[in-house]
Length: 342
Image (tube, rainbow, N blue to C red):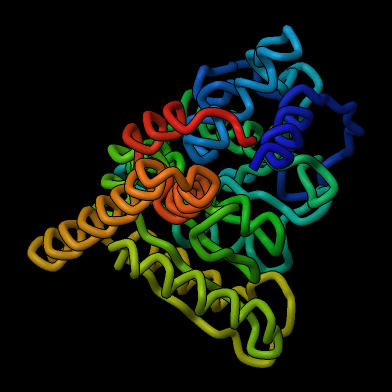
């Protein structure tokens, strides 16, 4: 836990230079100017890291006599690839904030006509590939892209989605979890994770909103067996914590590839459809999860009272990894009682 917190601290303190590239025909290479506290390191940490990881990280900062930087991205250095459909729908555009797997200078093949058909603006940071840090670069860039797009174009704020390809898809899933007040769902193209150490359950109020209002759409090629298996584990873990608004499509004759136009069209249509919730099913599931959280923290507390502090800490960290923000603030209070590892 401590080693992970130190690594995350180094990531958040890091910064990198960017190469700027010219967009291909059909899209624009755009500069944005606005920053937002939503993309600040404190808010990213609160939403995207588990509560006890944040505690460990802040403790490491304090020991080093440092504080968390406000923003890890300098907007003046950034370029975003933007495509705006020529015809705006009556209620305003939808938007897909895309996290690529590599540097991007053009829309994926065949996507432009589909985006135009559904009235979806495409926005992606041009230098936000798998070689970039997730927490200090890819994630704040996606948040900044969404906030700037909302201010610059006539977009329905209830139809802003995040998506990605491969490693970018994994980032998109984490952003959908942590920012359900910004993103109404995620298009997960050939990449996902089960809920746990990477895909963290955010603070309770955000996770309840995610359960009720967001949708996840998985698109993976039939020959991409590794990611099909990961999708199955990811979807199962989501359902185990009461997220039922999930759709999956296996893309015929494709491997680890960007979605074909027909699959993209299905994905966008699915995301744009209203989310319906079985309120009784959701309430019963939430009650069961609350019992699980209480039982896990009770067990950690009992171990501590029995003098088995190291075992108590292990149990507590397991609960933090599984339940994240659902276990707070009790998990944080118990962690303070246990003190640092011996």
